[in-house]
Length: 445
Image (tube, one colour):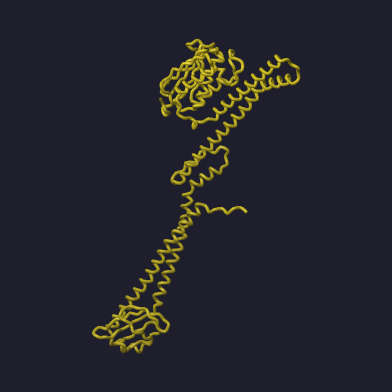
């Protein structure tokens, strides 16, 4: 059983308008009905008062003729002197104080006006049936009720019409969302309804976040595919070599020297596999990073740390750092450190350098440049672009490398809004230049 659908916003607006009109009409109706009843009774009292004054002016004549009138319940007159009735119509009114009052005589309600006759202690009471005023009042109150119902219906209808116009922007947003397009564009621009404008703004932000999340998911999937493809391509040869060595060890009778040689090959191949997987993992991590991961980072401090670590791991290497006192940019600390470590390692292992100079300077109002100079063999001009590609090794590269070190360096430069390239070094070897963006809105040293 499908769940019951809620009422539309347009219907709710119309219902709310009708309900509000009902409350107002009901309150006004009660007030008007009471006012009508009171007004009609006051008019009847004024007519009775006028007729009573006429009778008082002609009291003697009226007294002689009243007994001969048959009132037929249309009116009643009674004149009293104290408690005694002097004269009365067939319908005798009870003893009353001066003023207006409603009394019941023989089951019929009368509206009575009692006044004192001048220069005497006599009272004259004049009455007419109260039904006369009640009938007029009931008729007028019925018209008030009918008018109230029509007003409520009109309010509901106008609420439906104007409510439809008011929710039109929200309806447009609903149709846009329900269009079912694979890549929904920005929501339509709406105006005139603040809530709809706020909803459109929030919807646009939500769609932007969804698009960003989809892009990140697609990038993650592409990275995973690249990782798998690169791993399969690069690891196939060393794994095949390892299998061959294992088969030789398990099937042939080898002397100690031969066995030691094959085991050495296995160890070297295993190290290459491990280094390749580690480099691929770092490349994938870099591709999955975003601007949200960037934090204020001091490049001068990173250069000092990278230099000290390189001299500790590579005995005989001399690394000198020349930098501004403080160079703070928004960046990935681990990625920048990785780029510096790989740049120094490349200069030593593949360039054969024994001296490295790290220089970090501000090269412009929005840029920072780090250079890595060595006194090694350098990089041929024809290979200076190709060596930054994945799994590409220079002609003078040492054996055992994964071909990913300089690719990692170039990736980090791109992630920080810059680039990496080679130049000739004054030390006789190669100069690796790393340019990083440092916009004015980023922290600076």
